[in-house]
Length: 418
Image (cartoon, rainbow, N blue to C red; front, side):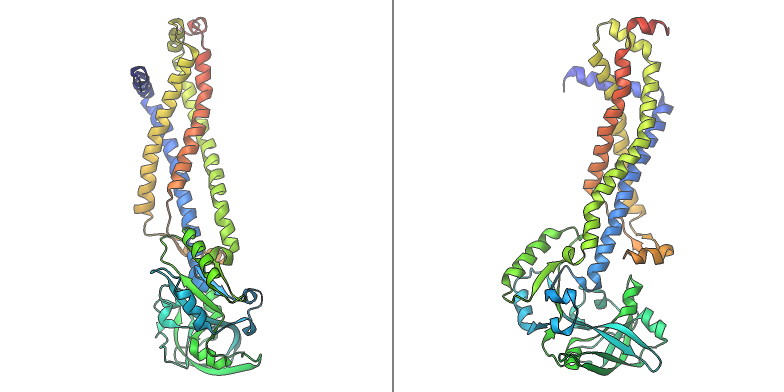
């Protein structure tokens, strides 16, 4: 930077504070505008992160291995036979933070002395589900399934309340066996679970995997193998895709395929892909509202200094020099606003909203979209750079208008305003 450039910056800084009130008002507008951009994007990313985590936690997993036909027709015929052998093949490919579980999931009917309701019966290995799905978390009521319990059942709290049941009551489950015949077995309710989605509580019941295998007459079978990794955020899809490719190369069974959560949840994946576009549109809309104030403020400052600009032209300063001086003031204004706004946004997201934003009052609506009742904003450097980039780029374009006006002032014209 030359001495002349440094002097131009110093002059621009002094010109900003000729009218402190006006400068502070437009700075406030810039700060509020940028904060709204960054905080809203963090809130949106937090909602998306919650949607994905809830879905992954809801028996999806980061990776799922199953018969492709099962996704079309979830029947017992489309199961994985010799699942232990397949699981051993996959286990050798997992990183240290990888966790693998086998599940047998089939449609069934839960019967009590008064009601019959359709449910999804899931045979699980409860001791391995911790950190993989919601069923591995502490229960809402009762006790967890013991691996040796052949008659225990876990039920959603919403379904428990709907049927008017209590912990310890006996129910009967019916499902299709390996020969496409109906099989029934009595179970006792050991505990109830809670999830972010009440629809899940109303639909899924859990029993031990080996118990369900014996019930349908198909030992060492499952309908899916789920794999979870220890990822800081669900956006780290590179590791997932790499592992999916390795698993598919390893599987020598043509009837099985591994898929990442993006393939298993295409609607959510598409929404995430479009999110950056939504945010860019939001940033531009906010700046347009902010830009009118910026242009008006700079234009007012330019007209107040008309005599000064005319004198500079009379002394031989070129039009480009006038434009440069006005643009420097605009840039300084934007840089101050961005610095304050970025720091304030980080403070709001990490400290003020760090404990989460409770959306419980909108429970029915957010549940329909799979959003968590408590949203934890996720701030992204990409969003900060995008917001600042939009502000500085469009700010320069907005500042160019009053700068060109200042450059067109002539000494003769300014004499009329003495």
